[in-house]
Amino acid sequence: MFKKIVLPLLAAALLVWAIGCSDNPSDPQTDADLPNINSDFGGYTAVDEAPGFGDPDLVAAEGEEEEVDDAMAATPLIQDWVVDPNVLAFHFRAVWGQLCYDSTVTTATDWTGSLTISRGGLLTRRLICWELNQDFLLPRTARELVDWQSTTTVHHDGLAFDLLIPWVTGYDSTMVVDTIDDTTFDTAYVVDTVLPEPFTLTFETGPYTRTFAMEELAALDTVVYVDDADSNAVVFQGYQKFRNVCPRGILSGRWGYDEEGNGIFRGIWHSRFGFADGYVQGFFGVNDDDEQVFYGKWVDRDGRFEGLLAGTYGLHPSVNASEMAKKRAGGWLDGRIYDANESEIGALKGRFKSHVNFPSGWFQARWKLHCAEVPVVDDNLGTLEDAI
Image 1: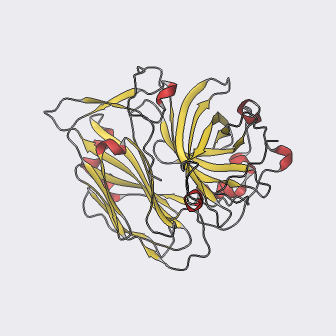
Image 2 (image 1 turned 45 degrees about the horizontal axis):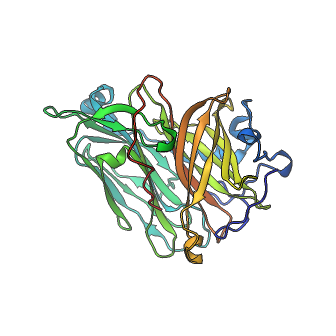
Image 3 (image 1 turned 180 degrees about the vertical axis):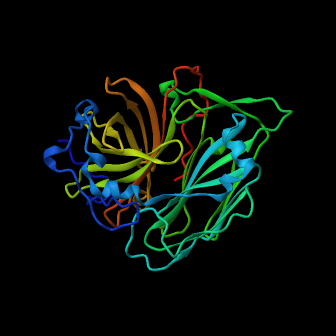
């Protein structure tokens, strides 16, 4: 049983799973089966589990995303680009609205907007928490542009895309370094090359607009709050889709406290193609060495063991931050992935937030598995930019 922790910014509360699309509470763990925060991997082992760890809310959350049949994918040029090894590929995910379900929100926010790439093409891959007869993808008119109609109140909407950018002849290639890992672990890798001719990606809506450069999309993990009430927000995630090496993807889910103040998290494990590929559950807290640590377990969609998770987490404000700053603070998480033999096989890095006014929270992270066939290099880029 790990000790209860009390942080100034967080109220002890029940964890609400539903990624903003439901208000049904879920607390599948009990005190009797809670892992031990002072043991290796928190007590998690490499045994198989029931699908979704036997949590029906977690399994249901997978259905909140829907695959898109983008007509642009059938065009000859896009079909050629998809299989061409000389075409750069990125995955980009945007979620907007209430990151945590909030039944008190009564004012609708219009997020009608577009995504535009300056060179190449876009393919819409996933709808995230899309409401029937309220949110719409508009007909495609150009391979560089996707338009949508979206309105949010108590929850959020989102979209996931693949970006395809053809190389341009006449330029020398330059190395790009994976930056999920912190430099202190010496596990960053040179995994591919890109050409230096830049392209930009512009996300444009009424509440918020932003243009990303090519370098940002290779390792993107950003949360932006768009109003003074610390309410509506936009989450951006992205990574380069390297071909046949270094599997990588995204984690997303709930991070918060149960009714006894124990920190727990539940999430969906997304593959590098953006598909729901499995589940993760875990817990966090302060161990006997006064370290803020988290442990978790990753299984596939059928409950088969995939990996163990272990890492640290912390809060962004300094000890001198005001009480309001602490209440609005998010945090970071930084961890490693291990196989059944407890050997490190990958890394993850992300951020979380729990809301002081209601019993829910969220987390997001990028993950990657190591590639033994590529060289280790010094990574001078440091940790991911703090954008919360």
